Image 1 (cartoon, rainbow, N blue to C red):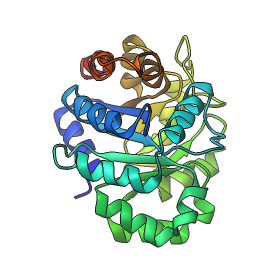
Image 2 (spheres, rainbow, N blue to C red):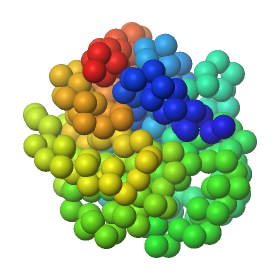
Image 3 (cartoon, one colour):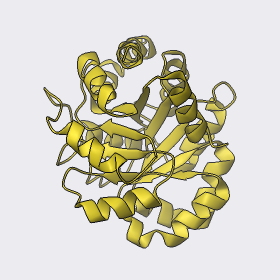
Image 4 (cartoon, rainbow, N blue to C red):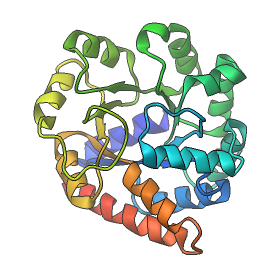
Length: 266
């Protein structure tokens, strides 16, 4: 069974909510990504999203754009990242999703890229700029490789299109709780309950809620509404702050553990 599917089934049977964590791969370098991943697994992270560095990350706010830049500067490529995931798999079975722009996949070739991901131990892809309407071949190849194709739903997504998106997705649905790009916010969106109910009316897939969650209290609030909470920019910000410190992994994993503890308390 795919690790993402197995993890959400395990959480559901235990009556627990999940923590999905996003970091920029190769920020500040790939050895740090490897060590952070292993520390996150021990800190209670249920799914790790790795942002593959790209020169034009249009869906991302400044914090994650700068992480992508640092990843590119550290020499991170999709192939080197897959080698790092292979190394992570020696010590961890935590589900891993690549958060990626389609150009990077297209450059390698769709079939080859998906096969390479499966061989390295990736569990799913979240392709930011590939809409479901253009994904027939992609979805078929992903299914054949045993990987989850994860789609985004936004607050502005019309209900008929939301219905189409969630029927096409697998693994989980990523609900973007705010309009705009990624980034930290001072409070969670006020219409979460209504929006999540709309999505649930059309799918039995788990719903992970992200965009703007900055601290344990917000994580706990969001986890009550969905099946998992996604935290990205707040963690990326910690990596930016402590990137040159020998205690990077310790600092960041302590913050991540505080988020995990809050989510598990729901």
